Length: 354
Ligand code: CP3
Image (cartoon, rainbow, N blue to C red; front, side):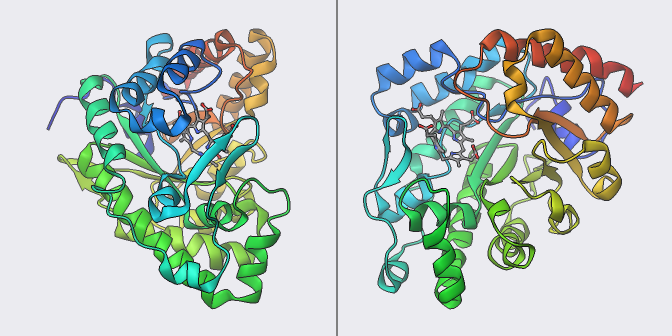
């Protein structure tokens, strides 16, 4: 077992005692950092950056050089799986992700392959191995994937949507077909995350960004059940250490008990949930990750610090909390404000861990 110099993040996910609350930020490598923008320009397109092992490794490490973060997250995207399935992912500036060949028919779904993670997605595994080596045990490396439901929304809509009408039409008018697609995605995600674990990811997170657009029953049927299937198929111990699994459903606050019952180790929370309330509901089963509104980083540092204090107080004493934003950091945030946030978590959390 290779030595890990800072294992606060892994310990907190296992609800073990730590000296201070660990912190990382969703989308911590990204456009709010000028050094990211420079590397991105050097690489070409966003996917060129993801596929360039050396540069993907470089941008993963950039936020860690600036801030005392307690974890690194693989630089990649959730849409690598649909891309590997042949849908042709591309990004149009200011418009978000799009697919050249979105899913439009039953035949398209039947033809979807389950990608081999060391072949079509081999560039992701190469990045994991390179980042793990470059980190040299400084902090753990988080691997990730999108949830089947969230991937399906992009694949069927073909790009960003506000109404989700195409994917909702599929699940409610042709549920069997929707389940066939989600089943293939669940299998692909399981293989993909297990390959990341074997390549060196020390924890994994599933992003269910769009679970919250569903009703409770539809969420359980079309999103949660597939995440549960993935959790039960994951490698849970590797290199002599437990590999924690974090489930993040944006807008999932109403269903925390169901999410915690999947067998995951931690539940990611957005800012619409009160952290203390979430702890009372599921804190005896899982760790909690979250949950400052990323827009709070627009506030002056003193106000950010106050909000960090409020969230720490809400969780209260003892282990089981990983501090994070409730969603990804916005591209127009001042990096100094991100720094103030991270510093405040470290300093203000110590009294809660005596
Ligand atoms: O957190 C990290 O630092 C790791 C890297 C990471 C990215 N995307 C890099 C990225 C992670 C974990 C993701 C996950 C992701 N991607 C999600 C789930 C999390 C969430 O935010 O809800 C989703 C829904 C996507 C799909 C996606 N990819 C979107 C909506 C976008 C933004 C499009 C835009 O132009 O605003 C991307 C592109 C993307 N992924 C960028 C980054 C840094 C920006 C692309 C660029 O540099 O031009």
